[in-house]
Image (cartoon, rainbow, N blue to C red; front, side):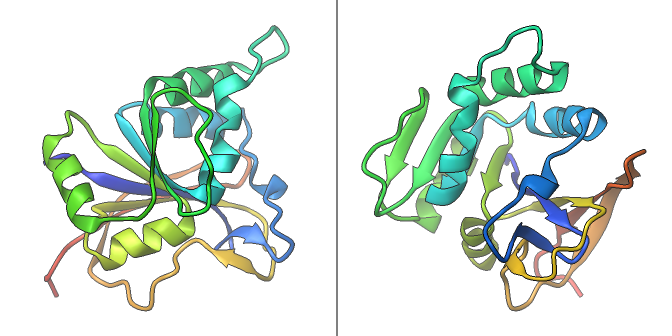
Length: 189
């Protein structure tokens, strides 16, 4: 069965947004961005909550010109090629292609989506990911930790308990960022 993978760029103290909702400090350099592209390239479907979708929809219409970095141009292609499901009860409509809007998160529907999928699924957004983790749907957590502490904000992992993690990959980058990937081992000590 294909995996559901949660990937997040975080501060060293574990936040995806600072106390003011900002995340400009999380912008990856070209080396990190290229690495994230390779992580996301196999994903056939991205699952988003409203806030994450509103951030990511930028890639639908980003202008690729000679000033656009190779990593950004590549990510725009990757994002546009994947299907997207947005879970929101307040969003009026979606504005990107290959995107459908679901009014509520249904764990059984996501399980069925995983069963039918021809490749891995990606989940973005700390709130939606926490729900999927609690429902036993997430198979792997991938964190790109930027070398900055923000002190407070929205935590990357919004779950009460997370145990049985197996480190499956790690990498360091010239800018000081660190990548850690954990597989969730269900029901194992």
